Image 1 (tube, one colour):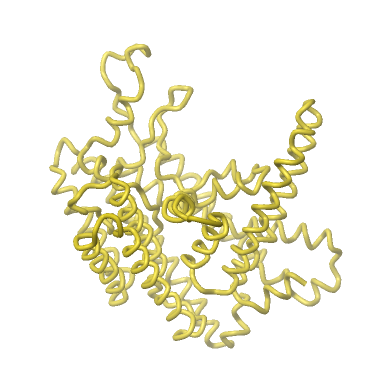
Image 2 (cartoon, rainbow, N blue to C red):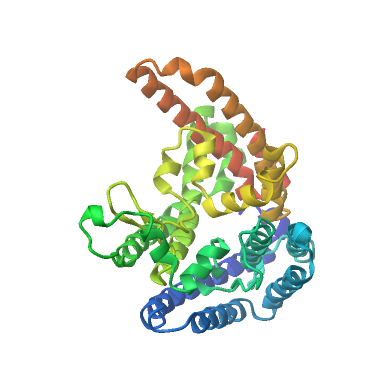
Length: 424
């Protein structure tokens, strides 16, 4: 809605229609992928098919998804993969991660620029930037793991695995290969002494319960998206009448409400993608302290921890988890100086070149440093008693949630003018 002034009436209607088409394409592909994932696990399981057949099916199916969703624009995905495949086969190991990173991020950035300046803030009905962002993560992750000695020389990572193609997430190379070869679950089960638990052999955990649970969350998120998101638009928070007639505390309250209403689409997309992976038998992470099987290896968020976060760090560690892991792997752990600042800048660049992204992530640097300083200097004063600790937790929850709302509003607004108006 905040882009209407940039697009004009007719162009805005076209952009709105493009968003609807994108949503329909995404949901159709993910539901089809869910059915295919169940079929893949049942009929192409490790006991029924070789790893070569499983690889081939996943690759061809993923390529089909790319062409179905994006038509000729899918050529960008193939070009980026082929360029980096060449780099991984020709570059020396000490430099392989640098070359892959520059090429992948450079190509992604050029595509982001074309979306802004060639299509004038519009949204293509075949907007391929989402999968291109995921593929960029996969390529650079594989290159870093090869550099670090955690990959293998054949570089045969499947970039187009259908269960992660549309909405991710990015996963480790060795985890995916173990899944294809049928060792994925077995490796995690060997970490537990099952004889002490009364088992005479390794159990065979089924993902069906986890998939059903995640599909329920997906359904609730979809309902919230179709109701809350449209009834509480972020654009209203910079409406002149709202700003002139609404008290400051009420404005803060509404900011929290509209930020909450913007979340269900992410909960929906990421949880559905997680369910698709689990349905294929991918995503087993072991056993929890209660002895229950966990299927959260590829989970991209923890909703409870997000909504109850009492620190900015806790919030961002549970939001877009796999992207945070990617940023840590390719930037934070490798940056020679200012790792926090460089990581936030990379996150902004990866998302795109809309000005709102840079307002958000540059603000995130300051919020992170401020939250760290407050915690280090003040928290120990509130640990002497339960009432004091509860007071501290409530206060930090309120401050964290409002800080997040203030930080992410420009991310939703995208453009400069509404962001400046919001800050004022």
